Length: 120
Ligand SMILES: [Ca+2]
Image (cartoon, rainbow, N blue to C red):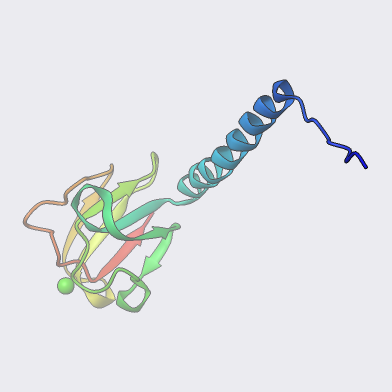
């Protein structure tokens, strides 16, 4: 008995694979862009936007709300039109520094000292 063999033409497989691959790549990329747009600011544990990160909306973030931890912040992305105010201590105390744009390194003066943040 001859077995029926289903021949799927190669000319159909290649565009199909390309489409699936394109979608598989596009979904996480689109999600990433959408997420970045939703953040008024993103704070990072290390310089050059590396290490643990946290997406912040406009608002007040006291020590317990900082997921990257106390005295950890080293770089910040600031969305155009927003600004980020860093505080040395919790409860928005101590030295205060204003960032009007992204900073791949907040500088020796501000590295690893932030304990609370306001995003405006
Ligand atoms: Ca501190």
